[in-house]
Length: 383
Ligand SMILES: C=C(O[C@@H]1C=C(C(=O)O)C=C[C@H]1O)C(=O)O
Image (cartoon, rainbow, N blue to C red; front, side):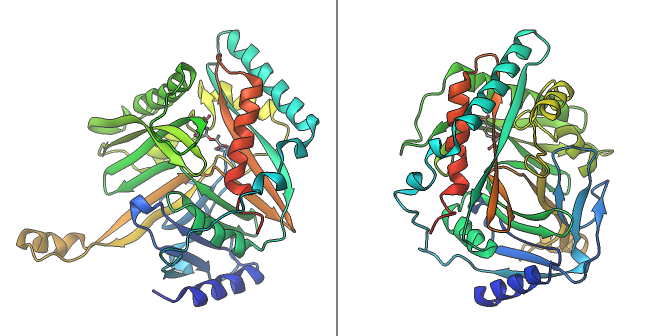
């Protein structure tokens, strides 16, 4: 563990040298410290079968390249940051810096037309759900590290990260969505969908449309895991879960991998889930690629620790001591869906924001939802 001043100086130095690096912190429920992997040279490393150890950064489109910072090629550092009691207070008048109308009517019109087109496609009967997103460019005077530390201070329940790689550029985010947690054969995932604004209350009512939309995600996950899991798959929920200024419906899903299945099979079964793509998966993906007129790149892809070393604490319990002989170091993967994120380019932040469309969707409500979601990032972009 090092002091956070040293941590951020080293991170900044690495960014200046344009070398691959990542800094991140897990959601508080997973008790995370702020960590980083600084790759020691400028080598380019890809992963296809997810067998390597390191930090992976994978795109939305399955057949595009996933990059990895290998554990063995990088310096690992860890710090305690932020200090307790230093939660970020954002300006009350943040909305005046990014009034929805600032976007101009053209953005709104384009997005609503896209949604209308999807609703018409859904009404034809083949496509059930499609998640449509837009990209919004905005200015920021802040440096990458300033944005990162502000995200850390504001969103303790999110997976917060800063990723740089010469092949992908600089990305930052605070995502509420776990793709996978895997330790030995035990896996955990979640079905997250349905959105409303948080107004101080966790006890809220959800509309039929949101409940059904989230149920589709749960059903898809359970169905797709059936053949690679052994024994029963447990689903806890649905319940309301807070993500910054938003609420979502969430179900926690866990189980054990069957003997012939590994991380690769799990990822292939899940990514991209109908929380970010749609149903049926291929039809939804085709619709997205044909109709969203920009490249999602790494938005709605996934990222996180892949097969990273985890030391298990010694226990005084005799039976555990015997187990230690074999199992004191295990491998752990913690992957998150890349949402509430941005790509930073020379004073410009590119935000990516989407929402699930089903036959009950209303284009103007869906637009509002993307505006609300955009404040997750916007609220840390102004000092
Ligand atoms: C697609 C996004 O979020 C996803 C879509 C949601 C929805 O449609 O209600 C909710 C949570 C996420 O699974 C996004 O934030 O860009």
